[in-house]
Image 1: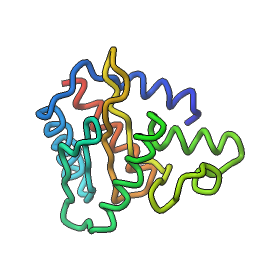
Image 2: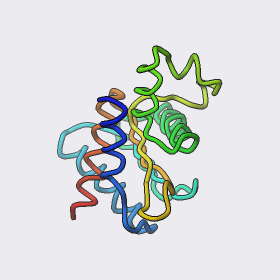
Image 3: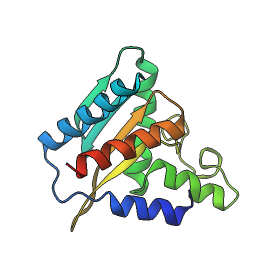
Image 4: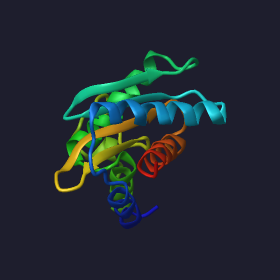
Length: 151
């Protein structure tokens, strides 16, 4: 996807409210989607950099926790999805881990983390998936947010 398409996707996934209960329900939506598909993921949801939901399904490990945090830090820093930031760098012939001036051990612009954008307020948090490929992590995060918003 292009950065324009990814920006439109982020705009389309805007929340009207986001409570602690919403974080729990969004996290559970993602876990349930993964169970239906027979895959194991790690999920992390934050609001204002406060963790509200974290779950590592069987088959995931401590390494997935590191990936969750590396990805979500990109959203915290740029207020865009990790997929958007990776695409923006690639469209300019660059790689985030080599050209961003951010430490790659702390920031990874690979698919899997989306901003939680609140209408009228902007980005207030993030939802992050790890455990699969970056593209599949991104797709799960998008699918989970879409299901949640369309309930």
